[in-house]
Length: 314
Ligand SMILES: [Zn+2]
Image 1: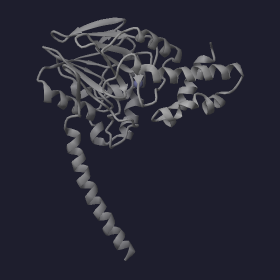
Image 2 (image 1 turned 90 degrees about the vertical axis):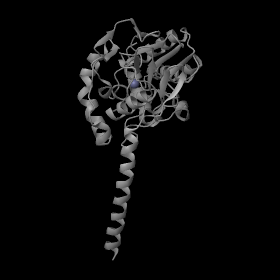
Image 3 (image 1 turned 90 degrees about the horizontal axis):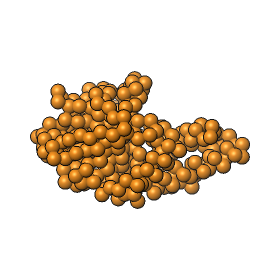
Image 4 (image 1 turned 180 degrees about the vertical axis):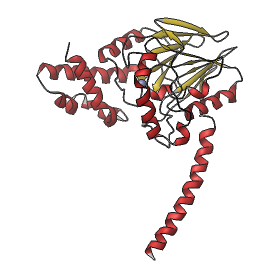
């Protein structure tokens, strides 16, 4: 009797799961939610989570800018599923072709949605060091994504390297609208690039700027603080972070991140001076920041470890 009830219950659950699964599938094929932050500038914000079947890899901000002749996409999300949703969102507001897909840096949650946006006229653009960084990590990125997402979101996901690269600075013309791309020195990664929409003064910072989601360090903590100081001197009407709200005021938006990176740097330097170990640093550096960030437990220890390895050699 108990087992029959269990079976009946399991059967009911299976039906409910199928219905939910179908609704979910429909949702995946529709547009991403986008908001307009300035004339012709649209952003879809990702959730502050790790990849999961329910978020489909939409865990970072993806954007597009519409010119008189063409559209440029800035970052594509963490799966082909996100890329398809972005493509649908673009088609809901314009029929102009996507001429450029710009990736702000190598991380999988910013590049793995590239494939659905590829058309004969599409040019993929990134930092001069992006292609090499992607080649070294492509297998791992694809395996991790496949294992953490639904088969449906992962379907069609591939790594597409840039066909046009930026050594220092490059402009792209969308027709009556120019984007200025700047390759930055090693900071969040060794291949960070910013994009400025000159028409509206909107500056897309990729993961040089985190808000709410704890910053993640995969480049150089000293370099990142230097790049933030440079960026502080570059005025913008608004900035779009890689993780955080669709738009933020500049330079106020960088205060929390700079404070976090500074706290790690100062604490780790002091501990190195006192001869303390990596484990000591992981346990106690910048712990005052714990309550200020989401995903702190997931990323803080490795940020400290990376900073320790870098600052040890100063
Ligand atoms: Zn990143």
